[in-house]
Length: 189
Image 1 (cartoon, one colour):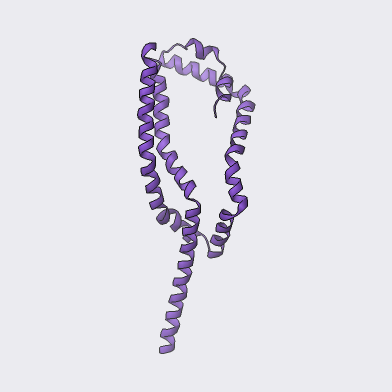
Image 2 (image 1 turned 180 degrees about the vertical axis):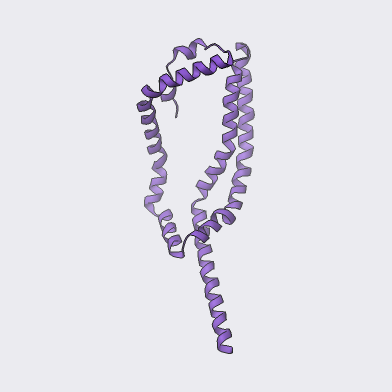
């Protein structure tokens, strides 16, 4: 009987140690992924603000020219204030939520060996270098894609803009109508 209890205690201890090791690995992975988690939170905060800015930009065109700049600056300041207040709240909640969501999923879906391999990759110099150069590489790709796709998409974009303006009963501003869409797109980052 003592042997059976001792064996059961050892099995429970081994399972507990295994789970603890997996949890520790997941905690390290989440720590390594903190910048990505924070970027998700920032993106969530910025998304509605960007949509609001786009809608406001369209509405600003309806205002008298002498009021557009001041109104635009006020809206931009209000939106920036919202983002500045929302990002820290979302970032804090994201970091608190990550262990129970992302961490729980990793513990469930990955073996201990897979978690070790993932952590090794995340902490590797190659991954760190990739994370540093990825935005530059992706931006260069996006710029090239815009240039390459512009001849095919500009006529369609201009037709869509005309159709939307027509549907809304708005005539095209002279500056926008005379400027090609490719010029607008290539200046974007």
